[in-house]
Amino acid sequence: MRVDVAVTPDGLDRAAVPTSTVLVVDVLRASTCIVTALANGCAAIVPVATPEEARARLAGLPEALVAGERRGEPLQGFDLGNSPLEFTRARIGGRAVIMTTSNGTRALLAARGAAAIGVAAFVNLGAAAAWALAGRRDVLLLCSGERGARSLEDHVCAGLLAERLLAAEPGADATSAAREAAELARPYGKDVGRLARDSSWARHLASRGRAADVAACLTLDTASVVPVYRADVDKVVAGRG
Figure 1 (cartoon, rainbow, N blue to C red):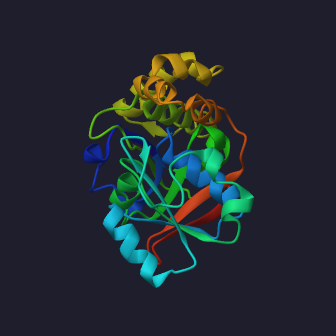
Figure 2: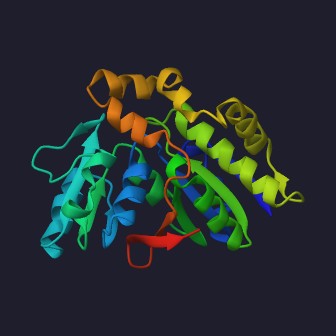
């Protein structure tokens, strides 16, 4: 098994995608929202690239909700933003959610064509690692990043995932990118909450009144759901680690 990390979708090894399991990471906040939604009974997440596409897809799914953000701010006229605290069972249980975000849904769509695609965050880190291992394929850890640049929290999450994968498979081949991510992540292994101070995006969200979102995203292994993107039906559904 080979373990690799891409710090942005632009860095994804396209040649390796068709034979790999890809775990998409967008800690703040799309991955955490998707995990939370499916843990709370959401029927499916439909990822789309743009707000306009989200509105267009709603015409064919009139019972669905639309959720999304741009630059961290909710989209006008949408039912939900990109806060995991909004994705309650009472709000989304049994319903599909059409979602578009600045980075996370873009990364999911970039992973299309992979042998399997899962969604990982700190909240389901162990379950996501176990799910990827069960596929018995090479694993690509895809960070969503921030508008084409590296995101510290995504990179750390990918590094912790790489550590768990390599610990479970001592004979696995780690690329230099995977080793670098694991080294970066090591100081955060027992305190991911430090990222509330160290991540520029976490600080930005807190400054916009979303410190509770940041706290909810920076918790380890509180969920067992592994969202699985089934590109054949264009939906993310609940799986297990």
